[in-house]
Figure (cartoon, rainbow, N blue to C red):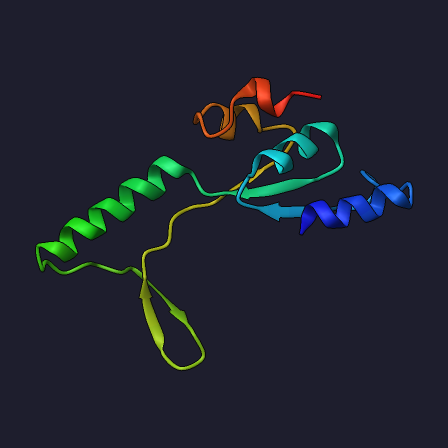
Length: 112
């Protein structure tokens, strides 16, 4: 995990000097980003994710077709996929992304 990698870098006095990325914009990752020990995290805007999943579930329940505009090859077949945009969260845009979306409270992200 990014947290484990950063802990090892801290022990070697190298935290913040080597690029470390993560995924899911968890609170600890967001805190490390503002502290400067983690470079970025991948954020999937939760509102768009939930809305898209709910819309797909309603269509499936009504036996209406889903339109998958993408495919992912799983090694055996091309799986129809609905892909959503992801956001690279950095120190420069954390306020405008995970905090502005209400995904993480500012007071928790900036807590020391």
